[in-house]
Image (cartoon, rainbow, N blue to C red; front, side, top):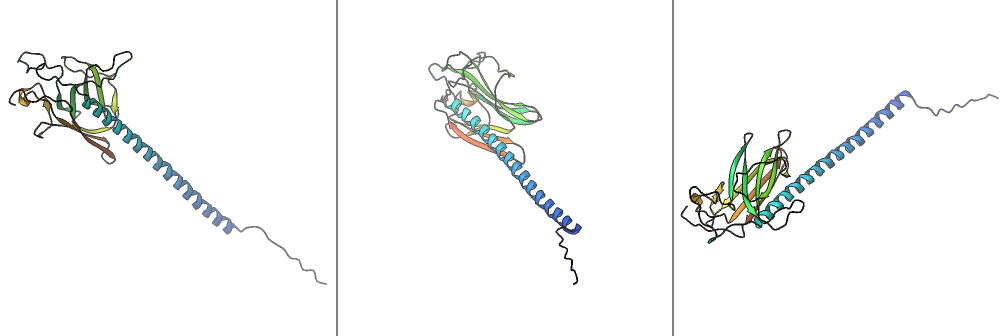
Length: 230
């Protein structure tokens, strides 16, 4: 009888192993690529949400301050003479050049004082919104909150930052006829010593390719009409 030897082979050839490694590499690359994309997208979304919350909170703070604005009205108010001190409760807005970029600045008085430590609430304070150069060639928006004074305003390092990565900040002032102004000073005869009836705010944060724009208009609850011809 002839013996027939049957040999079963359960191994893999070199070609099969290489093909398996190649397929495995494709799968791993796809999985890690997808994971990296999801992670990157998640970080981008988180950054956008954080930026949106910062801008929204900043605008809300401005609205509260302006809706609590304090304006001195006649007969308590009378137009200043040439050599008088500036009106303590004046509203003054101008354009400032910060490292070659123009930003609006606004000064007014308000009952929306943010007390420090044991300071009483409800007192009238001077509020100034201004932009300052920050770190890494960006700009920050600050809110100064001081006791009312006729002294010229001075920026302080201790003034809190409301918003970072500020690309532009614009205040537009409206008189009773609806005329728009980029600058305002209720101390000047040019404006008839009146105060604006509304102020619009336009804030842009981010960079040239990725930014968020916030806009609103605040109707001033108390305003002073012209006391002289502007």
